[in-house]
Amino acid sequence: MNAQREGYVDVLVIGAGVAGATAALSAARAGCGSGGGRVMLVERSAWPREKVCGCCLGGRGVAALGGVGIERTRLLEMGYVLESAEVRCGARSAVLPLAGRAGGGVVVGRKELDGLLVARAVEAGVEFVPSCSARLAPQRGINGWLVSLRTPMGERSVRAGVVIVADGLSGRSLDAVAGMGVCVASSARMGVGATARWGCVRDRTGRDALPVGRVVLCAGRGGYVGLVRLRDGCVDIAGALDPGVVKVGGGPVGVVEGMLRGAGLCVDGAMPEKFGGTALLTRRRSCIALPGLLVVGDSAGYVEPFTGEGMTWAACGGEMAGVLAMRESAEGAAGLWSGWHAEHVRARQGLCRAVSAGLRVPGLAGVVAWAVGRSPAVRGFAERVALWVSGPGFGRGAHVATGTQGGLA
Ligand SMILES: Cc1cc2nc3c(=O)[nH]c(=O)nc-3n(C[C@H](O)[C@H](O)[C@H](O)COP(=O)(O)OP(=O)(O)OC[C@H]3O[C@@H](n4cnc5c(N)ncnc54)[C@H](O)[C@@H]3O)c2cc1C
Image (cartoon, rainbow, N blue to C red):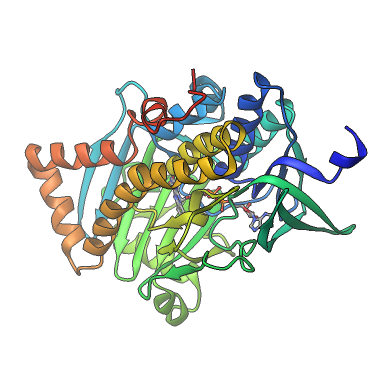
């Protein structure tokens, strides 16, 4: 590389979660056939890092990862087929079967998944810089965006032709850029999570309530918590809780313990001593694209995890943004990205918002669980909703429909 291009990257991706790592991998693959280009992925945390997440990746997310060369079989080596979801609310519960569909979801730990995506991106030629916090200058210059990179070794700047911002819920890399503010809902919940070394998780009858491949969601006053067994035998615990309830309850440990008890679950083992937490969840960014700047994943907006599709949107969005960044002009990529996001992500977030609002109505989750358990028609409807939100069917076809010049063949 010549000296002039030393401080220049064609695509800079900020944040190595599912959205950012998929975007970097997608950009590197898209660049391969068209003369290449320098792709850099920076991550604020030391690597690998923990992430609060329910670890259930929907069918569309699996398909999007297939589009960047991560095979379903590879994901299953790190996890399980997502067989079923159970919703428990007080004495009521309902199980939705999810397996058996071509292209269904998988259960996979986040450390393993994000680690695999970053490793594949590096293999594809991406420069990965962990422990590096990025921040954009207020405006784009003639040669792209100037981005300051802070590492334990000091601070430097790079200029990027396109920046893909995937800095999640707590990212501040766009703080200096006017018009890119985030609006957080006044009723927003916080995410909490931990992993537990539990033996059996039993229901009131003493049966194993957490078989491999099942996600169990316990809804109660103040939020809900999900449990799923990971490949290493640990149980992933992830919940969305009202911050006020967490404060009154003296922290998430007691609140989660109470929710499990309220749902009739009893665990063989101790509660984890500490839970990780997230920023407030329900939010929307006022603008998600400017010339040479695409915002993807949670950084663009998020609702709540109940319907379990955040990683799917992150993976599908990352795949799309990576291709646009590499193959379109700075202005063209911004326009196409805004359109794709409105059509495929915002539309689905509307449904998730409605489900989240319904869950806040006292007793409604229990009534729905009861109806799903008794009525095949209601169960069929719930399954169709689940499929629409995170099942197979939107991916490459949707990309092509946006008019992406280079296609994704
Ligand atoms: C409790 C809970 C349960 C969930 N369960 C599920 C589920 O079962 N299924 C599902 O699909 N989704 C689930 N989600 C949602 C899912 O976790 C997110 O939607 C997904 O992680 C979004 O990925 P992302 O890449 O956008 O963000 P993240 O995974 O948060 O990655 C953002 C990255 O950016 C880095 N970063 C931040 N600022 C900077 C900076 N300035 N410079 C460099 N790096 C930076 C961060 O360190 C982080 O690693 C859940 C969420 C919560 C809170």
